[in-house]
Image 1 (cartoon, rainbow, N blue to C red):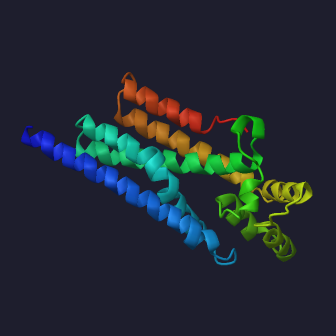
Image 2: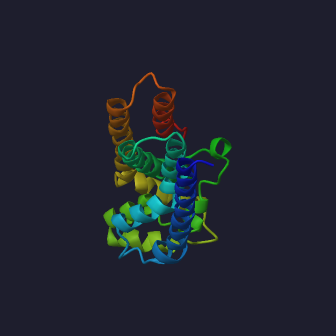
Image 3: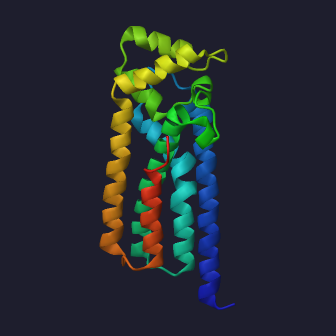
Length: 211
Protein backbone atom coordinates (compact mmCIF):
# COMPACT_ATOMS: atom_id res chain seq x y z
CA UNK A 1 0.00 0.00 0.00
CA UNK A 2 1.39 3.42 -0.98
CA UNK A 3 2.37 5.81 1.81
CA UNK A 4 -0.38 8.34 0.99
CA UNK A 5 -2.99 5.54 1.11
CA UNK A 6 -1.73 4.44 4.52
CA UNK A 7 -1.83 8.03 5.77
CA UNK A 8 -5.36 8.53 4.48
CA UNK A 9 -6.51 5.24 6.06
CA UNK A 10 -5.08 6.45 9.38
CA UNK A 11 -6.89 9.79 9.05
CA UNK A 12 -10.19 8.05 8.28
CA UNK A 13 -9.83 5.73 11.27
CA UNK A 14 -9.03 8.68 13.53
CA UNK A 15 -12.05 10.61 12.25
CA UNK A 16 -14.30 7.59 12.78
CA UNK A 17 -12.95 7.16 16.33
CA UNK A 18 -13.50 10.85 17.03
CA UNK A 19 -17.11 10.50 15.88
CA UNK A 20 -17.68 7.65 18.35
CA UNK A 21 -16.13 9.54 21.26
CA UNK A 22 -18.23 12.63 20.50
CA UNK A 23 -21.53 10.77 20.39
CA UNK A 24 -20.66 8.95 23.63
CA UNK A 25 -19.96 12.32 25.26
CA UNK A 26 -23.25 13.71 23.96
CA UNK A 27 -25.27 10.75 25.19
CA UNK A 28 -23.65 10.92 28.63
CA UNK A 29 -24.39 14.65 28.81
CA UNK A 30 -27.99 14.02 27.74
CA UNK A 31 -28.40 11.39 30.47
CA UNK A 32 -26.28 12.58 33.38
CA UNK A 33 -25.47 16.23 32.60
CA UNK A 34 -27.97 18.45 30.84
CA UNK A 35 -30.52 15.64 31.10
CA UNK A 36 -30.82 15.97 34.88
CA UNK A 37 -29.95 19.63 35.37
CA UNK A 38 -32.64 21.71 37.11
CA UNK A 39 -34.70 23.78 34.68
CA UNK A 40 -33.88 26.90 36.68
CA UNK A 41 -30.19 26.72 35.79
CA UNK A 42 -30.44 25.09 32.37
CA UNK A 43 -29.14 27.34 29.59
CA UNK A 44 -29.66 27.41 25.84
CA UNK A 45 -25.90 27.17 25.35
CA UNK A 46 -25.58 23.94 27.37
CA UNK A 47 -28.48 22.34 25.49
CA UNK A 48 -27.03 23.38 22.13
CA UNK A 49 -23.67 21.89 23.09
CA UNK A 50 -25.32 18.62 24.10
CA UNK A 51 -27.31 18.48 20.84
CA UNK A 52 -24.15 19.21 18.87
CA UNK A 53 -22.32 16.21 20.31
CA UNK A 54 -25.29 13.89 20.75
CA UNK A 55 -26.66 14.24 17.25
CA UNK A 56 -25.24 16.89 14.94
CA UNK A 57 -21.71 15.55 14.68
CA UNK A 58 -22.36 11.84 14.17
CA UNK A 59 -25.56 12.14 12.13
CA UNK A 60 -24.46 14.81 9.64
CA UNK A 61 -21.02 16.39 10.07
CA UNK A 62 -18.76 13.34 10.46
CA UNK A 63 -20.41 11.25 7.68
CA UNK A 64 -19.90 14.20 5.30
CA UNK A 65 -16.26 14.55 6.39
CA UNK A 66 -15.60 10.83 6.05
CA UNK A 67 -16.78 10.91 2.45
CA UNK A 68 -14.88 14.11 1.71
CA UNK A 69 -11.66 12.69 3.15
CA UNK A 70 -12.02 9.53 1.08
CA UNK A 71 -12.46 11.77 -1.95
CA UNK A 72 -9.20 13.56 -1.10
CA UNK A 73 -10.64 17.03 -0.54
CA UNK A 74 -8.36 19.83 0.65
CA UNK A 75 -8.17 20.87 4.31
CA UNK A 76 -9.87 24.16 3.42
CA UNK A 77 -12.84 22.32 1.91
CA UNK A 78 -12.96 19.92 4.85
CA UNK A 79 -13.21 22.81 7.31
CA UNK A 80 -15.98 24.35 5.23
CA UNK A 81 -17.89 21.07 5.07
CA UNK A 82 -17.49 20.69 8.83
CA UNK A 83 -19.14 24.07 9.35
CA UNK A 84 -21.94 23.13 6.95
CA UNK A 85 -22.41 19.73 8.58
CA UNK A 86 -22.64 21.16 12.09
CA UNK A 87 -25.28 23.68 11.01
CA UNK A 88 -27.39 21.06 9.25
CA UNK A 89 -26.91 18.63 12.14
CA UNK A 90 -28.21 21.15 14.65
CA UNK A 91 -31.27 21.87 12.52
CA UNK A 92 -31.84 18.13 12.16
CA UNK A 93 -32.04 17.69 15.94
CA UNK A 94 -34.17 20.77 16.59
CA UNK A 95 -36.67 19.70 13.93
CA UNK A 96 -36.60 16.19 15.38
CA UNK A 97 -37.50 17.60 18.80
CA UNK A 98 -40.32 19.65 17.27
CA UNK A 99 -41.64 16.52 15.57
CA UNK A 100 -41.28 14.67 18.86
CA UNK A 101 -43.79 17.07 20.40
CA UNK A 102 -46.02 18.14 17.53
CA UNK A 103 -45.58 15.39 14.93
CA UNK A 104 -48.34 13.04 13.88
CA UNK A 105 -47.73 9.57 15.30
CA UNK A 106 -48.79 7.91 12.05
CA UNK A 107 -46.15 9.95 10.18
CA UNK A 108 -43.22 9.97 12.62
CA UNK A 109 -43.85 6.53 14.10
CA UNK A 110 -43.07 8.00 17.51
CA UNK A 111 -45.28 9.03 20.41
CA UNK A 112 -45.66 12.82 20.65
CA UNK A 113 -45.75 12.68 24.43
CA UNK A 114 -42.67 10.51 25.11
CA UNK A 115 -40.29 13.49 25.28
CA UNK A 116 -42.50 15.04 27.97
CA UNK A 117 -42.79 11.79 29.93
CA UNK A 118 -39.01 11.29 29.72
CA UNK A 119 -38.44 14.95 30.71
CA UNK A 120 -36.14 15.51 27.73
CA UNK A 121 -34.16 18.76 28.04
CA UNK A 122 -34.87 20.02 24.54
CA UNK A 123 -34.65 23.62 23.38
CA UNK A 124 -38.45 23.64 23.30
CA UNK A 125 -38.54 22.84 27.01
CA UNK A 126 -35.65 25.11 27.98
CA UNK A 127 -36.94 28.18 26.16
CA UNK A 128 -40.58 27.64 27.13
CA UNK A 129 -39.67 27.30 30.81
CA UNK A 130 -37.58 30.49 30.65
CA UNK A 131 -40.51 32.44 29.16
CA UNK A 132 -43.22 30.99 31.40
CA UNK A 133 -44.69 32.70 34.44
CA UNK A 134 -43.76 31.37 37.89
CA UNK A 135 -47.15 29.63 38.11
CA UNK A 136 -46.65 28.03 34.69
CA UNK A 137 -43.13 26.95 35.65
CA UNK A 138 -44.50 25.07 38.65
CA UNK A 139 -46.90 23.20 36.41
CA UNK A 140 -44.21 22.48 33.80
CA UNK A 141 -42.09 20.81 36.48
CA UNK A 142 -45.05 18.73 37.63
CA UNK A 143 -45.71 17.58 34.06
CA UNK A 144 -42.18 16.78 32.87
CA UNK A 145 -41.21 13.24 33.82
CA UNK A 146 -44.76 12.33 34.90
CA UNK A 147 -45.32 8.70 33.90
CA UNK A 148 -49.07 9.21 34.39
CA UNK A 149 -49.21 12.19 32.02
CA UNK A 150 -52.74 12.98 30.87
CA UNK A 151 -53.66 14.20 27.42
CA UNK A 152 -54.91 17.45 28.96
CA UNK A 153 -51.50 18.07 30.53
CA UNK A 154 -49.70 17.25 27.29
CA UNK A 155 -51.98 19.58 25.33
CA UNK A 156 -51.49 22.34 27.91
CA UNK A 157 -47.72 22.16 27.58
CA UNK A 158 -47.86 22.07 23.76
CA UNK A 159 -50.14 25.11 23.73
CA UNK A 160 -47.73 26.91 26.06
CA UNK A 161 -44.85 26.22 23.65
CA UNK A 162 -46.93 27.90 20.95
CA UNK A 163 -48.26 30.77 23.10
CA UNK A 164 -44.79 31.77 24.35
CA UNK A 165 -43.63 32.01 20.73
CA UNK A 166 -41.00 29.29 21.20
CA UNK A 167 -42.30 27.05 18.41
CA UNK A 168 -42.29 29.93 15.92
CA UNK A 169 -38.86 31.09 17.14
CA UNK A 170 -37.22 27.71 16.65
CA UNK A 171 -39.01 27.03 13.37
CA UNK A 172 -37.81 30.36 11.98
CA UNK A 173 -34.31 29.74 13.33
CA UNK A 174 -34.13 26.42 11.47
CA UNK A 175 -35.33 27.99 8.22
CA UNK A 176 -32.83 30.84 8.50
CA UNK A 177 -29.96 28.46 9.29
CA UNK A 178 -30.80 26.33 6.27
CA UNK A 179 -31.06 29.38 4.00
CA UNK A 180 -27.62 30.66 5.03
CA UNK A 181 -26.16 27.15 4.80
CA UNK A 182 -27.46 26.68 1.25
CA UNK A 183 -25.93 30.03 0.30
CA UNK A 184 -22.61 28.92 1.81
CA UNK A 185 -22.74 25.68 -0.17
CA UNK A 186 -23.51 27.35 -3.49
CA UNK A 187 -20.82 30.00 -2.97
CA UNK A 188 -18.10 27.39 -2.52
CA UNK A 189 -19.13 24.36 -4.56
CA UNK A 190 -20.28 23.96 -8.16
CA UNK A 191 -24.09 23.76 -8.33
CA UNK A 192 -23.72 21.13 -11.06
CA UNK A 193 -21.73 18.79 -8.83
CA UNK A 194 -23.69 15.76 -7.60
CA UNK A 195 -22.35 16.24 -4.08
CA UNK A 196 -23.54 19.85 -4.07
CA UNK A 197 -26.98 18.82 -5.27
CA UNK A 198 -27.16 16.21 -2.51
CA UNK A 199 -26.24 18.76 0.17
CA UNK A 200 -28.88 21.20 -1.10
CA UNK A 201 -31.51 18.44 -1.13
CA UNK A 202 -30.45 17.45 2.39
CA UNK A 203 -30.88 21.06 3.54
CA UNK A 204 -34.34 21.29 1.98
CA UNK A 205 -35.38 18.01 3.55
CA UNK A 206 -34.44 19.21 7.02
CA UNK A 207 -37.08 21.94 7.03
CA UNK A 208 -39.74 20.10 5.05
CA UNK A 209 -40.26 17.12 7.35
CA UNK A 210 -43.99 16.79 7.92
CA UNK A 211 -45.49 17.60 11.30
